[in-house]
Image (cartoon, rainbow, N blue to C red; front, top):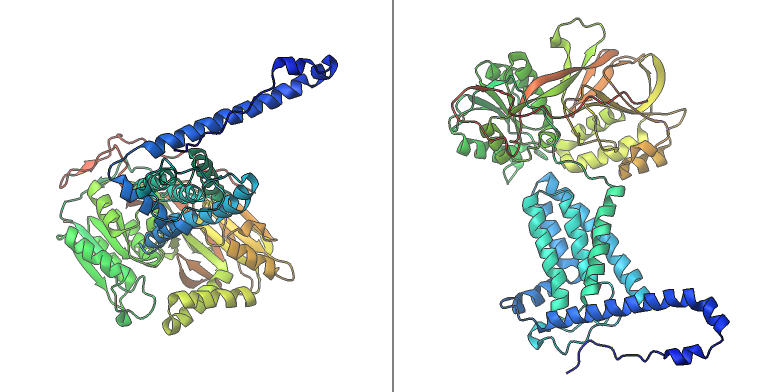
Amino acid sequence: MRVNHSRRVAVPSWRVISHRPRTRWAEARPEARSGLARIGLLRRLGRADRWAFDRVAAARLRGLEYVLPRLSRIADHGVLWFTAAGAMGVAGRPRLRRAALRGSVAIAVASPAVNIIGKQAFRRKRPLVDLVPPIRIRWKLPTSHAFPSGHSASAAAFATGVALEAPRAVAVPVAATAAAVAFSRVYTGAHYPGDVLAGLGIGALAGLGTRTVWPSHPPAARVPRAEDADVRVSADGRGLVAVVNLGSGASGEADTRILPGRAELALALVEAELPAAEIVRLGPDGDVDKAFAVAAERAAVLGVIGGDGTVNAAARAALRHDVPLLVIPGGTFDHFARTLGVESAAQAVDAYRSGQVGRVDVSYATPLAAGPDRDEERLFLNTASFGAYTELVDRRERLQKRIGKWPALAVAAVRTLRRSEPGELMVDGRRRRVWLAFVGNCGFGSRGPAPTWRDRLDDGRLDVRMITAGRRVPRVRAVAAVLAGHLHVTPGYHAWRTSGLEVVSPGGELRLARDGEVASLPPAVRFGKHAGALTVFRPAVPGTGGRRFGRRRAGRGRDAREGGEPHDDEP
């Protein structure tokens, strides 16, 4: 029986070495000693590697004789991981989609590094499989070089990418499967343990390396707890008035859909989980502001099922009537709900039942000539944009009913990037030719054209980003920066954070998109903040406990206020 041990190599005796000239040996002795030390270390590592392989080959793990070989086979060419990525992509959860994309990108980096560079550089032979039972070797063994393990690198790359984005309930099973695939490569006789460890290390570095071009971000913004809030919740939803916009999240006409939309699915879950809640359905031609105002008058908790535009209308009514807002995602993007950490209707119901509420900032745009009355303020919870983005939204809405939302968005983006021209504006008293401008409610972490995540919702700042141009817009470079998500490399890019901003359009009215809804404002507009003005339900923080239903409870300081001081203004 053959085992994975090399024959001993005779080492020259000291007597033979001593016949060499003493001066030459003395000069070469430091280099020779270091070389012999490295050779000796590699030999010891090789013996340990072969010994570990023989121990695994001799092991008998009941039940795994059939499982691990098949698992190793399924992982060929990344089939297992790309199938898992597809399943996460169709799940409809933004975090899972990001995890699937990051894991796939990590595999695309790790696989060539191992199979093209690593294996050709080291050219290590495959282990002898005499000790491996034939039942484990059910398929033809690979003939490529052994070091490093490509299967292990792909497994570690995908698991690391998923762990950076997905919740623990998904990341842990993926990591366990990746570990099983790596072990199966030794168990089936395809690799030495050292090959597998090297592959795992390369894969993990590839997964972490994706953060250099695509930084990961927290799943939810920090929302400080409202210590003085007085909120009533119940197990069956009594006191909750939820307004649902069934047209949210639709890609075309609502009556032509075969499958139910996100808003309809969310409504069905709310009706099943909170049967005592009052449901108000918005019709296609219904007055959104009036519906929310009437609902807020009689609600202990105002709920909203819809997209960001519908949530914006709900926030106005909640502020005016001083009631807490329960955001239930049911739109296309649901940026504000995702920022709160609520990605599904089930999570919204859990947040309601936990009874934990927090206070978030609300930003606004108002005419400079307006008085102190808040009725003239145009609120926004996510972003307000002017310039090329408003043209994109206008074009998308014109095309949406004919070709659907997503094709309309793609066509509108291409036409806008090709044809949009900068406009003359006065920004805080300084004349600028603005091509694209973005004002965010609190500081955003991403640097793309449509920032989507925030670290906190109570920093008291406006995040201003603007692309200004001279006589010509550098379209090729600007379009490349927009597509790559690195808007900051565009010529004329400016970014700063402030508590207020004034914009004047000498040419007439200012077109402004607030949370995806476009409207015309007077030529002179002021942007500002209402710090901590809106009370919203947030997911329960682990370790803080929930609320006992049917009892009114004010905050008693059991949760410390989260977050630090607001960010300083940036140039």
